[in-house]
Image (cartoon, helix red, strand yellow):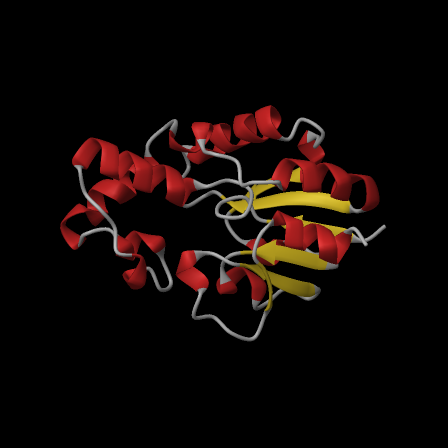
Length: 174
């Protein structure tokens, strides 16, 4: 059975959308999507970036993130036809470990704990395919990499892209 490695943040969970909504609601600020090349943190005003980063590091932030549209239905079907693993580089935000595990259990209950890897480096994983929004995770991958399109990676070239989960279904659920 072929193996698909799937990233969590900005692929099946929406931390950027949650952060922008919080920032607008709590601080009345706005973001500049044009500055998000490489990192969506850059889109926040420079004076507030440290505050945004602290919120990312806080307990509970990753617990209640919105789910990316159609990801649950498509992953449920992928799980029937592939070895699916959710691999998230969570060590940068240690408080996210429990949050991410509980979030996955709530929103993707058809995945078992053996299909989840919360790690510091995705260089440790192998598979036939990887879906991720960061080039740093895709460039050393030995299988077929797919760039999941996000505002921070629009300038990245050299990868086949997946723009949403309906597109992923067309690729993997033929």
